[in-house]
Length: 481
Image 1 (cartoon, rainbow, N blue to C red):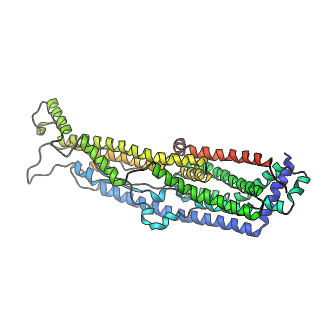
Image 2: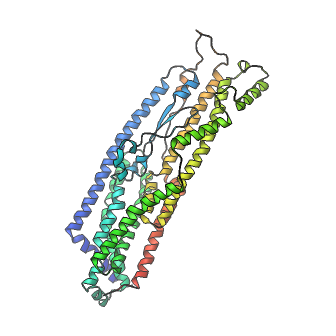
Image 3: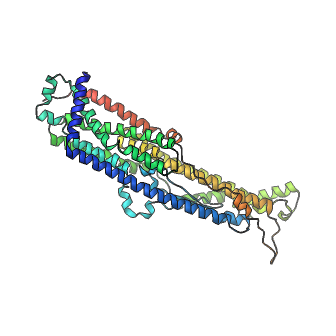
């Protein structure tokens, strides 16, 4: 291939697209809308972060200023933990609007996260969030199709395609030149957004520059490949069409299938092929299995009766009142261990179902690049389900540690002999509440996210290679007239 002819074709295609005031107006409008969505996202993020910090402080103060109490009462008093989204949710809010942000932690019970954005936004949230990622994923490809549908077919209709070959341009150079010229113009929609997202992410001060830079180094090259796919699709369909109108209709149909129908269809199929129980059914099943093993609140439960007999034999006493440790606290600690173990087992089964749903979505990224870019964009932005799972895991570890700490305080400091009426109730100093550390949510690292969800990245690379192959094969069959 003559690279001088290729450069001329790329430059001419790009120049023809740029010199159109209408095209430039479209590009500027899209970039402005992206910046507007980032600005709205930044405002929303900072307001949410400020409220979370305020509620965290209030929760902590209420915890530390509780009076002297029985430790088990404090375990049931509970603790609120909050999740703050990754700052790149300003760019791609992914699943964050649909997942809860607050979990109430208490003894013997694992609660789910509540207060999602979707839960308070009504039915309109189902139409999708106004984010720059949505614009770049759905709107820009449509613009690429409209701008490029006639790049080859019009040349053929005007009989200028044959002239290009007479002047020395090969079919291969023509295809590559048109595709690369269209692709370079499409980057006008993307490149101005990069520094805006970076500045907005750094502005939040919730993560470091290295983290932001690392994530953007995955996100934006992926979008560049994504636009390369749509540029290739546009030019190749234009090359195979007999008329401009048929090329446009074919491209709009392709956009509808790739962007609208396939993602919704696969999501529906994934949910039906790997169904998950309702929240009530899940919690009921956990409670049933806990009761099968042992009920710590039932003094006649066989499992805990065996523990009682073992303790009495170990310390060579006849009643629990004579034990050197608090029997109630010991039972509660064992009950917490049992319920947590069973809950984690059920949660793993539930998460496996969600993982299967996600894996199906990821594999279909090799069939539909739109799904690949959506999944990869969410993963790199820290707004996918895996990041939410990490929050749940961190919260459960904190809850278990809190409950067991309260049980330990009861075992060590509370007497087995109940106080008589009028006597001071059994309790421990509130200094113990202050010693227990606050919950610190940690963002999931990019490395961990990608190592657990590598398929979307592989799918994007796969589509890049497919585009190159399709261009090379199509160049051999390009019709000049």
